[in-house]
Image 1 (cartoon, rainbow, N blue to C red):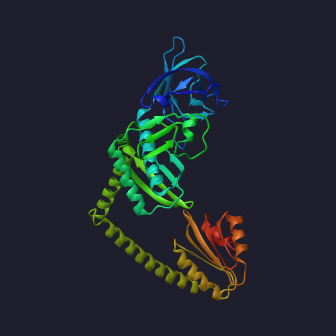
Image 2: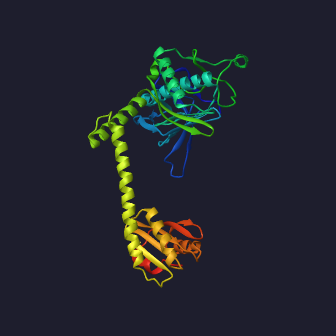
Length: 396
């Protein structure tokens, strides 16, 4: 089959088109989803790390009015673009396609912003963009070298200066001979016609996706997150309206926190640190109190019993472990604590100085489908069971 004519290459700002249906194929026995191949399309398919366009196809049969159906997915296979819809069409049908422009333009903003960022990283540090993902909520770039926080801030500033400069992008389809003498970025070996996107003085990159006409249309770029990744760095960004939405959400969150803490924005950090310190102090005091209660209960156990168990309310694991360590000094068998309740389940720690606790772990898994593990002298985990059943059958 001939390759689909990609209208988005020539007309990235067009939103409607007409086409002929060439092939229709049911995707399942229920025949409620179909693959449709057209002779031409404005729908950009999923490729190059970018999600596909969204939109609709409309078609009418005979005297029936045209039906508008959502395009659920768009894929490309050997140059042939496949649209997935829920309505059955027929080969020979004429369809009218409509692109969700807001979604398309947002992707264009993100992708052009990524090119600017990656181009500056490449020219400044020599790093390659070895991974790119553009979804509905996040844009990530993976670089094969490390960037410091100061580097990232400086790059972000330069990117936004390029956006403010409102440079005109250049789209070209060089001949193979011209490509041989060109320097351009590409994440993979390319075959066939290569499309080159140039941002003058900033970046030259092979790319199949629609881009904005001018860098000013990106609107702005904000780095959202930076993390070390596979010996390099993964950077998450948002551009344009998505960056604006993210800023609004963060502002809303900060405002809510200010209200909850009765704090100004300037005082917010110190108030949170103070709450963290208070929480740590309270957790320590609670653990000490729990240890005292458990220690008192442990003293009440039968001193002649080899295997002993305590049940307690939800309890800090450090306090549980400390008391189990004391219990094994006085009892030769299994010493266990189950903390929690029948509704939420129990956390447990079992220790012994004479028995293999791994056998107890196996018993709890087989009898109560418990989770957890450990070594010969101590195990820990969680279990959902009634206290009455645990008390009668907890021991291996």
